[in-house]
Image (cartoon, one colour):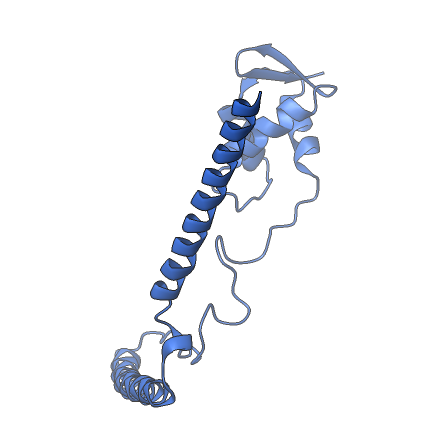
Length: 175
């Protein structure tokens, strides 16, 4: 029994030593990787700020030159008697212009009835496929800005099993 106790204790000390070594390696590796602001001197930071300001000034001058060219082109278009698009220059800030949306753009269309009601009206006494239903609903006046409207129609048909009956694969009718 005494031998087993010694083996166990030696295994425990080996594990502890290995953990200590690994911990030491991690801290030195992190210290070596941090070449960021913590290790930069005040002079280095000031030089970097000056460099970025000079680059910003060059970009502003370039933007002004392009704006002048755009104004010249707008005058030429107006001289031809065409409508000049009135798009203001982008604001000097990051991100999208204020009031614009990420994708799709514009406002969501308003319909007189919701999608499920429109589907019921189109499928009344008819059996159609999902793509046909989606086209028929839009032809009946339902407006959407969705690029994947067929998928939304399919989800609505599947979700409202009390209102729509699946006749065959991909074929639905109103109950």
